[in-house]
Length: 103
Image 1 (cartoon, one colour):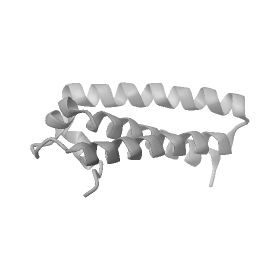
Image 2: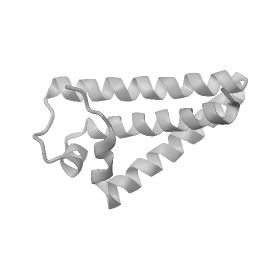
Image 3: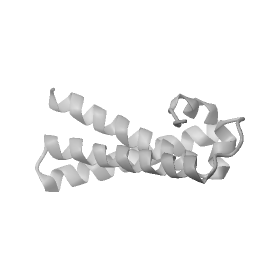
Image 4: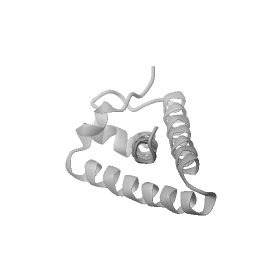
């Protein structure tokens, strides 16, 4: 895979991870879904999915660049993802329904 494709995938993983982390919170869950608030198990699953996606993002960044540059790029993807999810929750929260939330 090309470096650009790997970095794009890293950004997508970071955005999905930030979205799952947000959906693990009751307030944001209510903004996005009409379903009942997730129980502790589902909230834990969302946090685990978020952590795994963020870790995958770091791994993808590390596969493209040397560690010092990869860390910088990863932090930039985290910042961009946090802003993207925050703005989505503010303006169009239902767009986050595209994220699978498990069983």
